[in-house]
Image: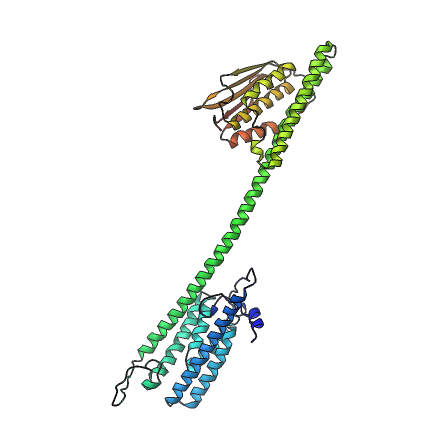
Length: 439
């Protein structure tokens, strides 16, 4: 058979006795998965060498056994029949991976019924043991064990000079050569050792192959898991960015709308008051644009949305409330903390909570007093509380909220190990947020 044909029909492992591996799906043996990459020239040469070596070993042992049997006056028809069957089995070893059961049956037939060796049967058993682990392996090993035992029993009853078990043994310089008269249990012990060694080597080879395959599958699964984790992280970053942009736009546009509405209602005020209100609208719009640019900059830099807006913390709450007072919000600010005392993430979330709560109070309860209290310490954490009265007949500002801002704040607080609550308590609406102090 040509080497090119062997590459297509006999996929083998790169090492191990006769390059055994699991194939032969046509005989009920689970075939090994196809290789993921073309084999190298060295691997092809190694595979061909194992196959040629296995066939050559079987043919050599067959010819040697036939010669010894002939010298021992074994009937010629017996020697010829066994030799023909074993020669056919030696050639059939080339296809032991594609048709392991048929090759094994042919290899067992010779030594089981005629005076020949069981080398081909042992090689075929190696191929079967490398392919299956169920009861079929036990049956195959039993058949080869019987074939080896019968073959070695034939060998044991020959004269010592023509027996494989005793050939080359020590003999006296002069005198008659003694007969050994080997016990009949010895061939079966040798057959047992041979079968156990062959099956053990095959199972060891298969275990190594399975381990390599499992490691390959584990590497693939690990890479897939890493890819999925990165996708989830990117999706989470996009959600954070969308939330930040929503909060920024909603708060900015709400302040602009409410300020413009107040300007429309008080259009009769003096020019100076109108100019101040217009300037406030302009500053609010510029602040919103600056925050959006900051968020987009973080997105382009790839640093994640978690850091977006962190430069606004407790020190920015005062400016936020000052801007609210300029448009008519009656807000009181209570705090016992200085800027820089809390962690950057805690300060950022605190600023967002105050901004969202004051904007909602301005939107849903215009003119109602608002109390902002920011307190805490390293042991108890940071507490942000915003209260505003709910008048019985609130003015309709024409702005409808979606509630996503409060949900986003609750998610942010939960992510850092804090809590968030926004609910109506009596005739007040209370927003409470508890955060770790140094987060």
